[in-house]
Image (tube, rainbow, N blue to C red; front, top):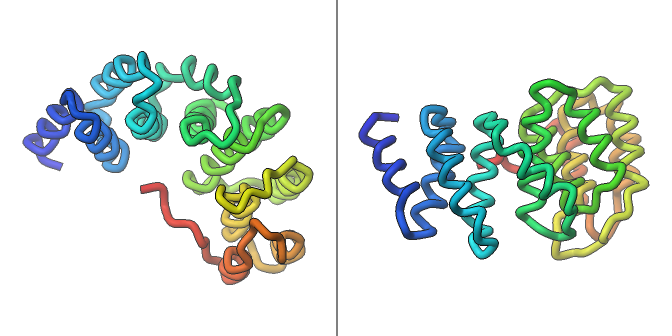
Length: 211
């Protein structure tokens, strides 16, 4: 990305228009523009003073997590502990939280700790971090994570993404003989699409990449 393009992104980040700020944050996160991480964090601090800016905050939190900005961790911890249900901001914060904590701890341990109190938004966000970052868990960890998700109290809401589908996408990266007995246990559930299972058994993920 050229210096002129980066300067345009910076101008948009400091724009008064919410759409410009969101687009700038998305570009910074997608292209991993590390030189703008401080400016993005400063913009986030301004936006976070008003909960009405949740769409812009989501874009900023997502980007800051990808860029490894640990300065946002205290805010993420508050959001995660508030543990709001069916809340996209909470899901995004949970993903960023696992990523940032995962620089020093294992994604599996962090996710397991979150599941000890998590509702769907926090739980789903943690699983997304493992999936999006292509974290290769040990098979023993996969089996333990499967059991944790299996006994989790699911919403069974057809209008939200069932976190079991995210787990299936994680499992798609493992040998078919290993995952088949696991994913078949999620077949014919109302909120788990069988096509997600079929993709996994072919070694493919039904979900797209993060951006």
